[in-house]
Length: 249
Image 1: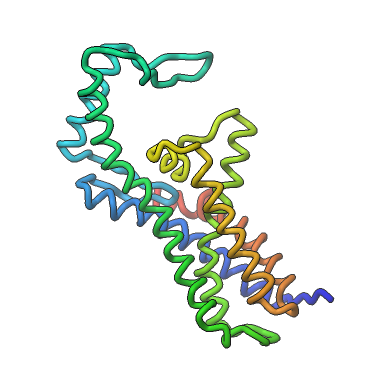
Image 2: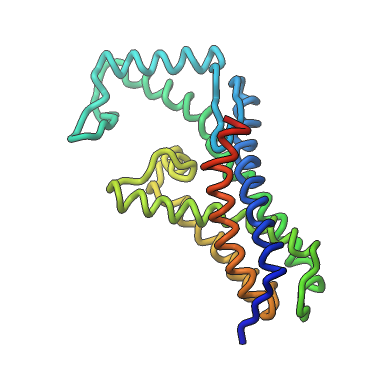
């Protein structure tokens, strides 16, 4: 039998809205911290991190790469899309490949920063639930403290959401979005573009299933699922579509 609690719905919806916002900012903080470590003049905005002024060594590296790409016309156009013709042989290719490798060694940890922060936070929450089963096992209702830990564990849902968005982009444009962190990481590792999105997205769904079916009692399960859908979408819209651009443009 499905139970529904309006009072709990309001509280959890507010919680999902709040943690959607916190999760977005903390995710960008992961990128920000690593970028600052590597010397970028980074700043956090409502939904992205601006790397700002590049450190001297990185700027010189990027300028050298661009000069070689222009010199040997390595950027090709196919239809409406541009692509990099790295397979072309040219006299300075070993030097060019060294420059690209050096650039990737800097960008890779920056790309990792956001997803790693998100997944580490979610893993801490999930681990607390696993190690303290007495907090929720056999309970008919959950305490506020347990709900807060559940919200932390559900940081993993960002990975599932990104996987869904990656599939949507693929269906709409016929290619994996190179703007997504997970696709960038896969490209850095020379993997199939959707590899990281697929693995982490499924992991996020597992965490959600575990929490929904094992942690949340039946008396609160429907309310939890409805509030998650409503609160997540509202949080996304409130922060990325309205409040975020005003507070952190």
